[in-house]
Image (cartoon, rainbow, N blue to C red; front, side):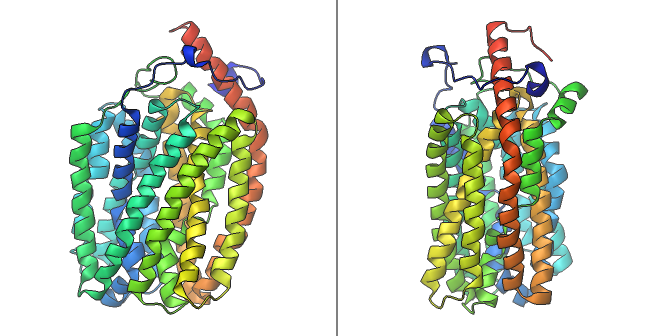
Length: 445
């Protein structure tokens, strides 16, 4: 592993283009398909976040029910994400993605048949178990489509496209709030689109192979105990896990529409309009952050990506105060504020995915992404439960203050601990990969 195989060193600059491994063909086209797949992934979560006010009225649910529904989906992802990665070591990743992010959509559609909270909880949780495989598998495949010099831009575009799809679906789902049992049709439609993308993945997605952009392709055997132990000693990875466990950025997506309905008094249909500009700004934020992050990384490979991450987290916390703690009368004010928050949040995947890839061996990246996203899901579950219960007890505005303002500022301070281990471990990995390329088969630790 990179933290053990090579002593600390100054980061090594990327290889000249003439020495770089050949790039997989049609990689941007493949990326677009993966982005579309992620945009319909978590369809049940999109319906819950947009149509919960209508669903709440139809089934007579308390505010804490939304937190419970989101938390259950994220908690099952803690186990399901690594499980899908393990399955993808024995079957083609393309087929596994088609199943977990595509055909699994039948469970999303089935959630539209729920007659009470218990049925809804079970069905949405099963649906979320499939979606849990999308994050780690697409992130690992992205690392195999693009080398370290372009991963920021690629990750920005990938998650920007995913956000765009969610943003377009938001206002459309919001229109269903005025239709009798419209939330049911939301689940039906989301599930059908997921199944459609499963078919598209089988027909058009090309897997470049593990390690395709790192000089040699790696086989896909299960990780050894030594490799997993070294992975769990990777300080950069562990600190990112701690950062994702204590983040409050997901609250805007899960509770933003409900906040505008319950706290600010807008109708469900009107409040859902903010989802499109938020996701458009998220798209812009991811793409722009990806481009900037790649340039910053080339100029400051030891600190650039970490500094960008820390800045984005602190700015998010400050903007959250303005958006949630100050009452703005016109809806357009929230469109602007939530949009800016979406843009700032969009920078996160464009920065942290390349960070994880740059300290992890190619054959362990799927496992590393599964670990981080599982911890992230646990953090999302925890904050969702807290928002729901704090919202019922003290009001959503107070819940937003503690979990999107105070928690995010503390989260930004935590990132300070990343600077030294990242510089050391990214340099070690680059040296190990150069050694592998120069002498294939001699470094199998």
